[in-house]
Amino acid sequence: MLRRGTISGIVAGLIAILAINTFAQFRNSSVLPDPIPEPERHPGSEFRMARVKYLTFGGGGSHGIRQPWWAIDYPYAEEHFFAALRRVTNITVADREAFVELSDDQIFQYPFLFLQAVGVGDWNPTAKEAANLREHLVRGGFMLVDDFHGERDWGIFEQAVRRVFPDRQIVEIPDDDPLMHIFYDLDKKTAIPGDRHLRVGPGGQIVAQMQGPAHWRAIYDDHNRIMVAMNFNIDMGDSWEHADDAFYPVPMTALGYKFGINYVIYAMTH
Image 1 (cartoon, rainbow, N blue to C red):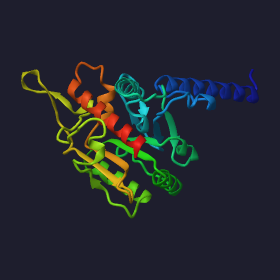
Image 2: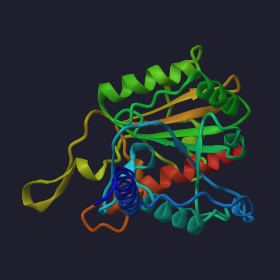
Image 3: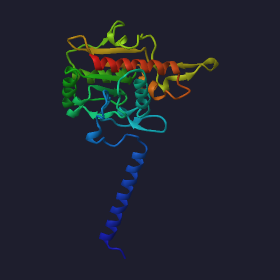
Image 4: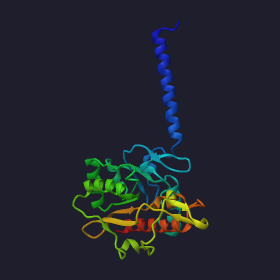
């Protein structure tokens, strides 16, 4: 006969095994890398993007991968875009991006921040995070916000970013802004769709059903430099992620690459 203590020990052991298995399954369903050791963070690269981590419930993804909302499109988006950035510029690009929390002073090591899915992910920065981000940007940092759609998403983002810059306006980026011409000459007439926005129309033609008109918006500093760029009703990350997907339109991936490259060069020179 097993004693009560023995039974308790067996139960505890089973719980531990289940917890380990559950954690392993979670790790296997995600492709987020382990933290990068300190000496490997800057292996001679000129550019290293940092994804902003934030507390979120749930997530999404594709290619059979489910990520938290802040990591949506990872890793294929970066793998494809970094290759394009290397190919058409002389910039040496780190193989892997960083993942940073805004509360961590480590963000000051990364001038280019990438923030995704702020609406569906319910981005809600704390006072510490907002203050750190504001300091990062006024020092000369740059943040690109991508992949949020519709009025609900905009409301969540606007409320959050007001904690960072309560005294600065959000404006449409004018056509003659240096961002639009610094490497490629770009126009803002074409929305970049997400994979979920694509449908097969009459005659087999692929058409996009967006959630609203595309807007390229920004918050500027006192010297007319963009600190925060916003792709609203645009999914540039998907255009990178699905670059090797025959269903995703090649012209949209090309446009997404061009916008991304302009953002990087602008951030590195302004």
